[in-house]
Length: 103
Image (cartoon, rainbow, N blue to C red):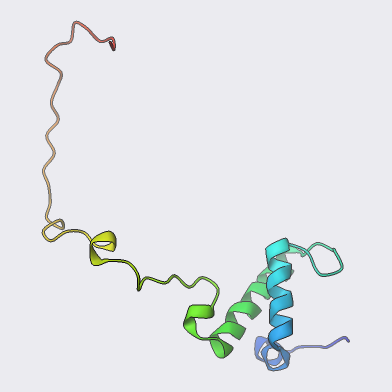
């Protein structure tokens, strides 16, 4: 079946869940279902179609690139209070310069 699409919206209007899955597989493998390699241009268009399809048809948590941050504790993903204050660093020269070897 050979279709001509004038825009991404035309393509999205024709896409279904099976087509979406096939495009994702092609991107993951770098090859079409028949084994032929995706060109850089095809890869770019496939990624655009996948992202646009998912934005219109899937909840956020099922989309490509979603990162679930709900299980992270505040301490794991935020700096402690006061950590945004500037800290002055002081360079200290070594007092013992006669022995530069490690023991």
